[in-house]
Length: 207
Ligand SMILES: C[S@@+](CC[C@H](N)C(=O)[O-])C[C@H]1O[C@@H](n2cnc3c(N)ncnc32)[C@H](O)[C@@H]1O
Image 1 (cartoon, protein in one colour):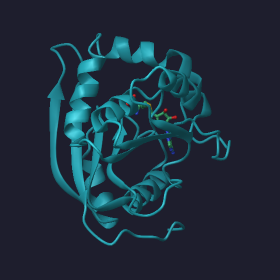
Image 2: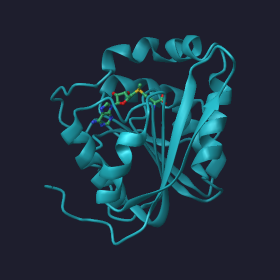
Image 3: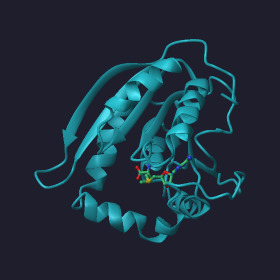
Image 4: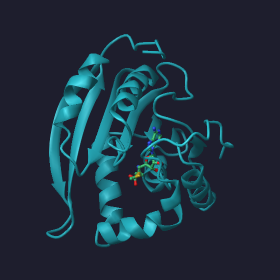
């Protein structure tokens, strides 16, 4: 279920490989022990359902990817992609212990290793601002390409998500709703944005 590294090893700003051994502990601290609630909230917001095919881009150590795999069940499929091989290695170890495994592979948002219209749902969780702006725009185009028409794109972050609306609309990802969720009075507020892939997905990978 875990594929070997396929993306180029060229370093890009935002690649958090060095954090891989500490990432889960960091999330535990940042969420004040409420990571499970955070992940369930993200699964609920994604609208992923039994049998769906789901992509998490920038999956890190795969905690959310595995929660999504549990949600879609044995008849669904969930893929986690991250630019950092170290993150994918940690995710792979967790995957071997999961009741419902996912597939993890090294890859970049700006060149997703999937055919057009593959996914019902795509998720970017705490990752969309971890890259240069030009890479983000190419990445949004790629997400639009790999989502089927009518598929759902969910972004979750602590940063304001309004700057994404215009760039998403340019590639056919039409915003449906935004909001905030508080996990506890001390934990940071999570913001979310959902969009629907409404069009014939663009196929030009060089734009
Ligand atoms: C803060 S972590 C978020 C991990 C996970 N999504 C979560 O919710 O905990 C951001 C991740 O995005 C990855 N990343 C950064 N730029 C990327 C890119 N261009 N393509 C794919 N992944 C990228 C980083 O390596 C890192 O694992």
